Amino acid sequence: MQSRPHSYLFSISYFGARYKGWAPQPNQQTVQRRVERVLRHVLEHEDFSLIGASRTDAGVSCVGGFVQVFLREKVDMQTLLPLFNEHLPQDIQLNSVQEVPASFNLIQSVTQKTYRYYFANSRDFHPFASAFIVNVSGELDWEMMKEAYQLFLGRHDFKGFCKPSVNKSDYVREVLSASISTSNEFLGQFFPQEIYYFEITGTGFLHHQVRMMMSAIWQIGTGEMEIYELKLRFESPEDFEKLPPAPANGLVLWETILNNL
Image 1: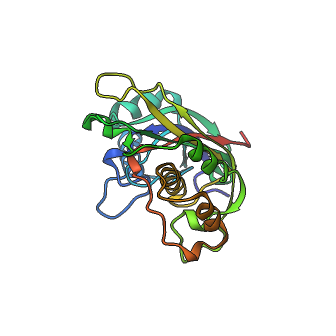
Image 2 (image 1 turned 135 degrees about the vertical axis):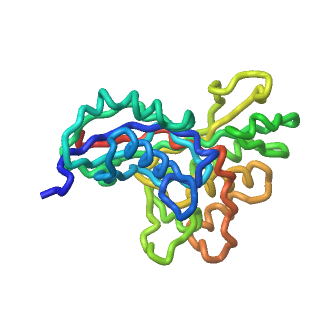
């Protein structure tokens, strides 16, 4: 039997610039630590546990994430939700909450994730825009970039497009869709007239995978890398130097799709 049988699922959004990612780290400010701190304050105890659907890296933001909280006693979370947000910093927000069975497994329930990476290609990029957008210098070949991201579609071994781990042997992931579109989320005098986002949806992603994909697409667009090399990185990743990941500040976990709800 679950030691904490009452389970609550929160949707969460946060701006990641001030945080060293989601997961707790020694002597570092992380999103999970801030959420736990507020839960302790509002609930007036620390007899709970929580798990996030995604472990975003330092500087990465989130629009559509989830957090599952386990408690020993049943509480009215709908009533407490405004109190949580009152005590959370303005760059973290719990959007909604619902009670779920204690048997509900958040990690196993994730079926799809969508990321967006925001970037510009501007000659007069304002520093204020750098909080949300990465500026790419040089002329970009958009047709070649499209050819590049289309190569990511389908089920592939993405070892050449991630940060490998000694504890991981399976680097196969499935990309369901990929595109580059014009953004209208950012408007104002400090933002470039043309802002773009690379959007990618998959069943799961590896560490730094989306940022390395973005880096590869830019290199194709500027002519630093040829399409044939991109293809070879799937076949023989060990023959190439690791791609530098694109900066974290442009990346947003846009949507998380769950089943079993």
